[in-house]
Amino acid sequence: MSIVSRDKLLEAAAQVFAESGFRGATTRRIAEVAGVNEVTLFRLFGSKSQLLTEAMACVHPQGCVCALPAQPGDVEQELVEWSSSHLAFMRGISTVIRRTMAELDEHPEMRSVIAEAKAPYLHQLFEYASKVRPPETAADADMLRTACAMLSSSIFADAIGRDVVPAAYPEPESEAARKYVEVFLSFLGIQPSAAGASRRAVGVK
Amino acid sequence: MSIVSRDKLLEAAAQVFAESGFRGATTRRIAEVAGVNEVTLFRLFGSKSQLLTEAMACVHPQGCVCALPAQPGDVEQELVEWSSSHLAFMRGISTVIRRTMAELDEHPEMRSVIAEAKAPYLHQLFEYASKVRPPETAADADMLRTACAMLSSSIFADAIGRDVVPAAYPEPESEAARKYVEVFLSFLGIQPSAAGASRRAVGVK
DNA sequence: CCCCAAAGCAAGCAGGTGCTTGCATACAAC
DNA sequence: GTTGTATGCAAGCACCTGCTTGCTTTGGGG
Image (cartoon, rainbow over all chains, first blue to last red; front, top):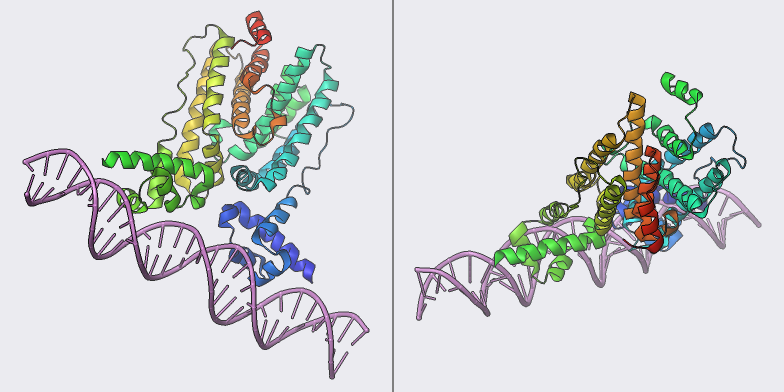
């Protein structure tokens, strides 16, 4: 029985934190949302900080399932799929990301939520891109790395910024990932495929 | 005499807000930082909300001075300068941006801080880029717009994300803007100039 | 010298917040 | 049936927070 209350509290904590931030997430509120008594919260987690910390640790692992293949095949499709799932995932936890980034100075233990959600993906992308178009010089590799960072940044900014300044991002929302990838591929020297274009025209996913 | 206290309070409010967010910015703390009595705060602004709102309105106007020229000349240099100043400006207010984005749901009146700081710049960039390489088709224009959004997003993400996940952004920090612009220009079909390369090599600004 | 606006100071109030204590209740195992 | 564990409930404590009140101090203008 203990485990049920624990999970309910963890979930409620994450939700209330996303809505109201650390200071705004009162223990009374969390307990109410979880449907358990406030005292139970302290009995199970000891303190508000510990509950929140544990709750944040649970946010990421359910994360992005899509990975780039080890050997590139249909580059455009693979990248679009990767970017889309990455974007969708980050949009899903965008409020948590925003709050965590804002309160990092006060609660450094939450750095991992962001760091783990971002760093590995960039590396993965760079590895993949390097196979698609192996850089010839150091400067070339540097530019490729920058281009990867830009694609990654675009997805990140779109995920957390679109509801704030919609005009700053490509429309429609559902095609944004594809458009980012097309620009990225064009940089790599690959023309968007006819398949991609036709799929786009008919609006098929 | 009144004006002095007002300004001190506005400045202190912005600083404390950046440090601690809306809830964390207590009137006692703001007054302390401003070096005035807490009662004075309420006499001059009526309430905490009003003080904070007024303080936020003062953040942006001191903003980015650099504008792209109406007619492109040295494209690379102009874009690098524009991006650098834009990036520097956003880095300067990055904590305020993060907090504002996180607390937008609770305090919608602060939306303008972000919106005004971002939307116009993207438009400006697209106008400029359209002159450099006039798009031939609608699809072409769409891609150009996306590329502009990506450059803008990269600058945005760099400004607010670099201290959180440094590994996700180009090194060194001081050359980041230039690198973004180089990738962007390469997309436009313009090779980075020898001047840019040599400047880069010697590390001249 | 007096006046008045701006600011300080001390105190407090009502409500919220993290956390504790003491006790009652349910329910499963032995 | 007894024991033990998990949970609920009521109350409260110490502290913080936005905001108010009543009073004194200060300093420049008439």
